[in-house]
Length: 125
Image (cartoon, rainbow, N blue to C red; front, side, top):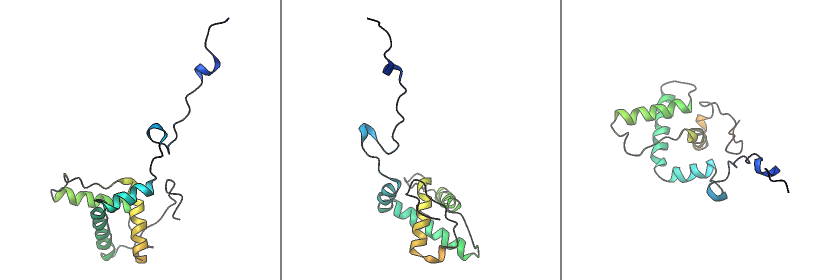
């Protein structure tokens, strides 16, 4: 009997399933994580985001970027000395905050340029 490596011993490891968490459990989708976050401390983050968007739009800007708004929100928290209060703007949620803002106020539809969301089922244009 020949001893050696069986063909399956050196088979490549399967690629991890990005939709699976530890022990094969399903990871929550970005939409599910956003919904949970926005119900918690994300509500304050979103209110701040919406306020900054309104201020920028009211200043006369016809278009602006969601990421820029998120950075303004972060900056304001730092200069207010509130950066260490657990208040976070998750970059993955910025596009979803923009879409929520547009859903709540159609006046923002032309303010932001939307792109297709890959991780969120392709919502958007």
